[in-house]
Length: 336
Image 1 (cartoon, helix red, strand yellow):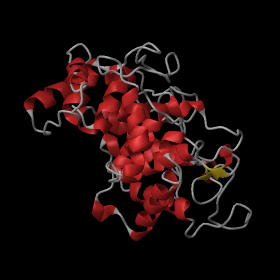
Image 2 (cartoon, one colour; image 1 turned 180 degrees about the vertical axis):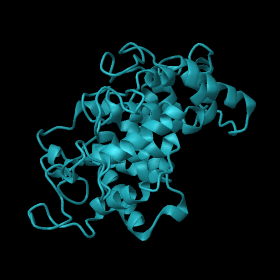
Image 3 (cartoon, one colour; image 1 turned 30 degrees about the vertical axis):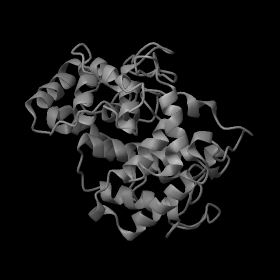
């Protein structure tokens, strides 16, 4: 390592402090990579579920398994069921540790998943969008959900990327077609003026990255290839993906945050591509250099994009060194 080789160790020591049980658990799991049966990790996992942010989010859940309002759970942002479940997954929550998590997963599948496999904002096929379907599939799998409906959602998501078996938006009489939100193949999105959306692509590719090789059907492999090609169609460090309503990339690409909902930063592009096996691809070099450049003298990363006062937990002061963002960065850099 270079002259800054002490930085990651300093940062890891910070993440392992007992006063932040949620961060400590994930640092032991993802950076120190302790085995699942390690007693220290098991103790940390239990503590994270009873004392950390996981406990705070679960405390707000209604007995039936929803947050705020019954139904598909997309609104109100960012406290309702969809966002609470995505947040719990990013916090490392697991079904095995608290039966309320299983209830929440079942509630999402009962109310936000259509019969054809679309995760939907209101329970209808027309209200799906890439960031939603990718986020929810990823979250449910991360939480440990193994519901028999998930493979159908996975197949639908892959088809929306490749276009296989889905009629164009304009074919109003087709039984299976694109709609105004998820409006076409290749991550086309109505919210991005019908252009491919890299925010949505990152979520979908993160979802695919959870699959074991034997879960990747030819359809899913084709969707992964298309997604990787799209994310590498520009230098990821440039953020120069199609923008439907602006002539410049969103400045949010360069604002590292936690949690990550549909607004996406450059680090999540790395997370998605790393999960698919592209960690050492030279096309990631510039963005990894940029991530390293954001470290302070102690090897920490600041919270730039936040949801303070918008979701159930405050994760730190904006602009200040942040353990959750630092955890995300060290995972990708592999420098624990």
